[in-house]
Length: 334
Image (cartoon, rainbow, N blue to C red; front, top):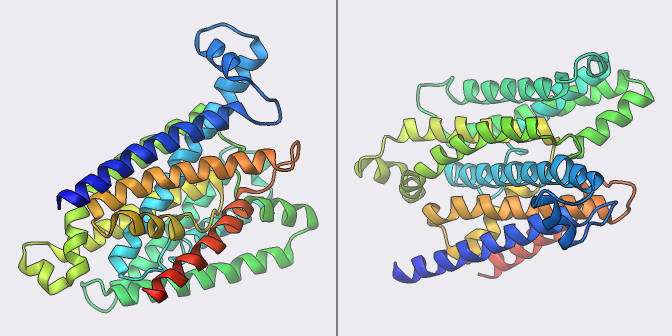
């Protein structure tokens, strides 16, 4: 136990350092390069008005949004994997991202985005909420107990249904709508502002605390539902709370940043290799690692082909696919 705590404490310190470095790099580099001394001048209330605008109104909100969205997706992925006892579980597999994408693509197709600025995130969140309710309803339709196998299958089927809806909308849309929808679906943090950061933070941070508070119950569920029930865990309440809260966190992230894959799948696996399956360590560390990963992915998306910006989903996929294959190979050998 003491060894686990020591490893966990070291991992926390290292990840906090990685987050701080990633945050600083994200503020420093971009289409306009700003030196460290210029950044500190901005913090001290000096420097040019242009640097002040870039640092405080563009790059800091963008890095904070990346931290919240990446952390939320990784945390949700870790909870889904524990709840469903399936290493492939993540928001995308559970149909949440598909529902959000369907809502966003629908408002793009009907042209509401140009008349109502909040139409896109609201529609994406509404689509994700519909997907959550559908999966939840199917999982509870047989009886009042939530069967995790039915929950996983429901997520896959609901995700396939929304994929068909998106394909239908694409088939009936013009080229401009199709391009806008594809770009949104590949993810971007370009819409970051202090307002969006405040909304996502007010939503994500309290819900993340709820999930981390379920860590012991998730540890017991990993042993088995009967054992967890015998040891005093209210199994059905924990499963419903974990699924509902993790789904809402993922929905908020997708609504404001688009469909960003692999964060919820790869990050919890990587953290689990380092600190083990103790969810009291795994969940908060997954939040930090996911946030740092998405900050760095966004930095690459903005700088690799500057002044053009690559969709962040491309970066996470290029990094996530090889990382996942390496993890899979290592687990098979183990």
